[in-house]
Amino acid sequence: MNRKYDALALLSGGLDSILAMRTVMDQGLAVLGLHFMTPFFGKAHLIPFWRDHYGIEVEAVDISDRYVDMLLSGPSQGFGKWLNPCIDCKIAMLGRAVELMPAYGAAFLVSGEVLGQRPMSQRADALNVITKRAGVRDLLLRPLCARNLPPTPMEESGLVDRARLLDWRGRGRRPQYELAERYGFTEIPTPAGGCCLTEVQGAARFVQLLLYRPRPEPVDFRLARAGRQYWAGPHWLAFGRTAEDNVELEACLGPDDYVFKLAEFPGPLAVARPLAGEWSAEAVRDAASLVASYATRARRHFETTGQLVRVTVRRAGAVDTIEVAPSRETALPWAEPRPEIVREWKKTQAAGGK
Image 1 (spheres, helix red, strand yellow):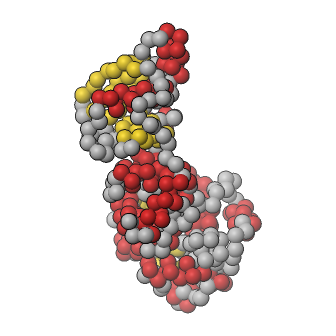
Image 2 (cartoon, rainbow, N blue to C red; image 1 turned 30 degrees about the vertical axis):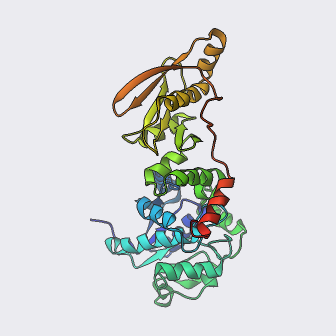
Image 3 (cartoon, one colour; image 1 turned 120 degrees about the horizontal axis):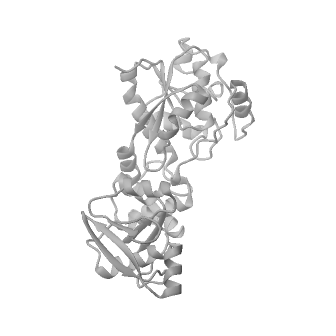
């Protein structure tokens, strides 16, 4: 049986969402933070740290499927600079939070928005759109800027003391840092951020995927986020730069994927996901050459001895070993996704996908 809480809070892990929770908790109310997870954001591994350092209760909530559906259907309020649907994102999270309220006995919701702080999603008109579209007009409290907004039913009923809420406005961060200091926080988290849809590199990777798989699954987006990404037409190759990348690549593996690994030298793990049928032997060899070129010792071995290097290729339980020359000058024109494709794709979508 779930523990009962007075309120559920949207917790990104940024400073504002933490302060919003603590501001309401200061009134003796029990608040549970909901940390939403999608292929584009979410840091569930930090939940124990947040509990210990900020004195808050947090649970991870995966909304990957509904988030991807929203993104692919076209966000009703449009995109930001890159591929970020910030307003629809908040609507989606609030919608899920409303669904969870009965399970926790919660009477209202909390979010850490500050009026005027973010140009797309925290303007006064945007806050009104979010409230209306999510159906939370009588449920949502924004404690950091509440005294700049009309009173909510929670304040009018006396459940929450409006006088103890805040009146922050604008993009300055000094009030946040001062309050964090009063709470005794020794580590100050950054403003929420962390969403790779707001970043040019992340947006380009995802649009490249959309060009060849119009309805990706959440795991496809996770793979597109991991490691280094190369494309040659519909041929998609992702390989790790760090041990953490390799772990993520392994977690994203599908039954039809090709897995490349140097047989005799240290080097990156690489995953290729077929999007237009099985790869030809030439394409597999081409990808193996590219992967081997990022293994320093393998490349030097070839340059000094002229001997080919061995790469294992695993797929559907079968393992093959091929010999290749490490090279980034291959028959297939491998390239990383270009930022320009994001604007081009958005223009096409705005024109009705034509």
